[in-house]
Image (cartoon, rainbow, N blue to C red):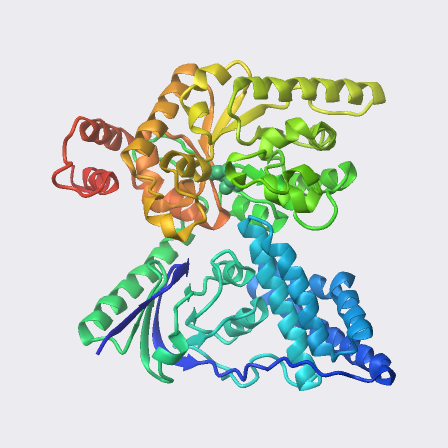
Amino acid sequence: MTLALSGHRVEDGIAVGRAHVLQRNEIEIGEFKIGRKRVAAEIERLRRAVADARENLSALAERLQAAAGASASEIIRTHVMMLEDSSLLDGAIAHIEKDLCNAEWAMQLQLEALLTEFRAIDDDYIRSRADDAAQVVRLVQNTLTDEGGEEPLSDVPDRLGHTLVVATELTPGEMAILHERGVAGVITEHGSPYSHTAILARGMGIPTVMGVRRAQSLITEGEQLIMDGHYGVVFADPEESILRHYLQKQSESVRFRQALDSLRERPAASLDACEIRLMANAERPDDMRQAMADGAGGVGLYRSEFLFMSGEPPDEEAQLAQYREALKALGGAPLTIRTLDIGADKTADLLDFQSLRSNPNPALGLRAVRLCLREVELFKIQLRAILRASALGPVRMLIPMLTTAREARAVRSLLAETRAELDQAGIAYDPAMPMGGMIEVPAAALSLEAFANDLDFVSIGTNDLIQYLVAADRVDEHVAHLYDPQHPGVVHLLSHVFDTAARLQLPLAVCGEIAGDRRYTRLLLAMGLTEFSVQPRALLEVKKVINETDIGRVRDAMHRWREGDGQDRFPTLVQYLDDAQFHG
Ligand code: PEP
Ligand code: MG
């Protein structure tokens, strides 16, 4: 009888095959007291284990570079870097010396200290780095227990074609090894869609569902499985009709992917010959190169806060070096650098602003431009770096979370001040560098006219705009059902912004996740969007929908819907528009 299980969607795709339940003898980390005389030997044992783990991971990163591309291997290198970071090893050594405990336990204590720091930070990205720290420590503990023995997953078969691996949790390194062995799909009991393991699965295109509770006990070895990555569901021992349905869907999806490949060179033009600008949301030069190969017109959103998320805030030269690399990867296409968008809690820990530590509601607090306008010294370092980058290639600057036009004017005057300083020092910059603003606060969206004189372009951050509109935290799974881009209030506000921007002749893009979600492409086109900025892997999918849409036709349909047509026949506006495109 069919057993249906669900989890978090990580990577789309349908996988059909047999289950391989990963048996891992979870190592028990216990505490042993060691005598003073053993301290030096224990420290040496720990150093050796860290070195072995690092060597194994570096070798894997090398292999991946060739097999799965640079970005996949970079993720593994992040783990190598964590192993090289002295705070992990030094902290553990201090525990051995102070508590006279074994190396495994010392790593555990050091991990707990790190996790306490990470948990205090209200940010998905940082929280997912906590997963990375835990994985790296587990790797060292495993190596200590094996005494440098086997490679990870040495008990898993070499060829995993038509096999879905069911695990408690996986490290990025293990995910990469499963990819090397041709795994058809991966199901894990734990793990967040924001983790590096998840990012890697997406980068390598492995259909994956995470957070499937008790998967290891509910699924039996060798059992027939179907995974629908798009919906985050897994069927064990499916009935014949379900199997037939999915085999058919699987071959359709293979054809879909092949069709996408052929779109690389095609322009992003609609059936009625409207040219759409497709940009990428990217920070890593490799992703930028890939995006350009897929036909992106440049980067529409470079989230500069990623440079500030670990360690010391980068100085002007370090920021400039990153922007220079990005411009090089883009080969003359524009780079839209968003100024620092960090929130109260993140800032507190990373930049040590004591006064911000206890903000109870960071999403509504001193974040993004609000913070930059208060920490002017920090902000001006970034403005100098951005201006200097503008002398090296086409740079556009984008300000996050604008609420009032006064904020935009304050940034303009800081920019003018910074330019004057650069002039004095004889440092080059582009005096015509465009300055845009993100529309992600509802009050700003409703008063776009007020910004028109102070901004050269706008980009709608729907991720935040929607969360503020429907009052549902974008990262809280308990209210995820309310986070709906098709909510009539959301559609109404977006249409209003699009119409106002068109009237004001203010160039407008959307850079929130919905721009890269092909389910909403036609809706955005119908509302009048002409510039999308999307995660690189979504470029071709979005281009495909653009190529298959008659914008005039869906725009008319949109007007009819707003007058009440079709609301009794179609559950959603998106379905109504699809019907108008194909049957209207
Ligand atoms: C947004 O809010 O839509 C956006 C693009 O910015 P971020 O996701 O970085 O907040
Ligand atoms: Mg935002």
